[in-house]
Image (cartoon, rainbow, N blue to C red; front, side, top):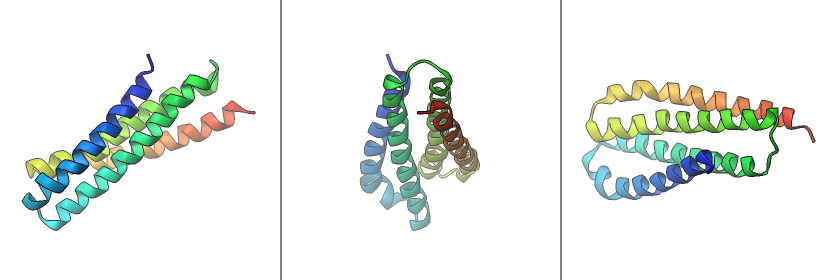
Length: 127
């Protein structure tokens, strides 16, 4: 079992479901600014799904050493960052409680950290 690959696939699935649902169910119920937030969240959700899936696939090919451990850390940071960033916006848009967006910057910071861990993994992989 490859939990990071599974998480990437689930994030991808949810990005399609939420993207389609937003066009049909949310757009008419929120103002243009909130809908713009949702579209930004969907883009980050899709990007997160792709990178988490790529890391999960990469783990299938990387032998066990320091770079592999860093890939696992980066993968989970990408999952956490994507969920914090995108889903805080989704919940704020649906509930009307904009305080949920206070979590969004933590998601962004977590995503930045994930990218930096991926950089370190690249250096440690050698080759």
